[in-house]
Image 1 (cartoon, rainbow, N blue to C red):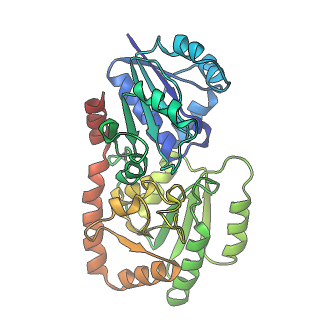
Image 2 (spheres, one colour; image 1 turned 120 degrees about the vertical axis):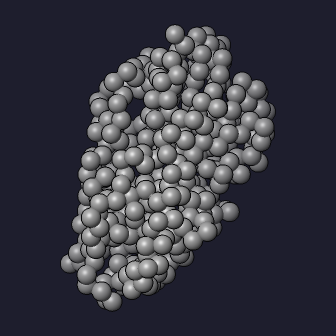
Image 3 (cartoon, one colour; image 1 turned 90 degrees about the vertical axis):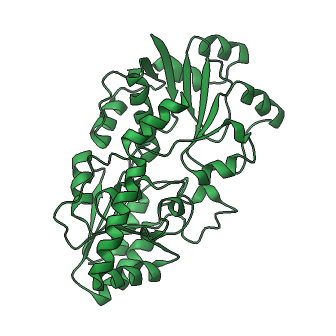
Length: 354
């Protein structure tokens, strides 16, 4: 049986990128690979199963590989350690490794403007890379300044469109994003400001802010203070069933990552794709988001609304509350668009990649 090794240094954050990585692992299993994750704590996979609704029981934890990749070792050592694998899928933290499996795939979830390491050595490393995998065209364009387009492959994130379905819609505005995301802050504070503005016009809506935290979160504490007595509820570390329910009954989806960011100067600080936006669309939520980064790839040709600030988010939502016909139209095209990111398409494109 062919052996595959996966390394994701952010695995325990259990964000959208980790759903991507673990779904990629599922695809490898279905294609006859035995799959190992370079990680130290088996509980992380159990937590991921609960958070993402994935069956990860056939994936093995490889502590030795995690320890190996966590320390500086010689190129010779890396050669003998990695050459025994048929495939390695490596999530980059902004640097490039030396990998010597038969097929080496480097996945960039973040559009890093610079790649760490000596430029000449990095060129040597790319010789052994089969493909650079990107989660969006936005990310790819940034990195094709460093690497050959010939080695680029865009594999859009997997959205479980069979699970995220509309239910009986209520007057709920939903946002799903990590509360502690230092690489690109999700800016829920902007959404609280937008809701304050909307609440002055209509008292019929409430807002749910759902997301993960890893330990204590000053950002979450500050948001609770900022929300005051407004009808804003915080859903911390929701499991998969809870997320399905939240998406299903919410009418609007808000997202503010990238607010006041120049995406040309700091592409890493905007939304690189927008998995939660696509999930919300699948469940019949109308997306109203800050128009930066990968969000512009998802929301094209009247699919949702791209905004610049809290005022626009609030006013756009109020307009759609008043115009139910337009709301329904956007809802329908958004649901149809979300199918492009289905699990079926993800696994089909992954098969083409391999």
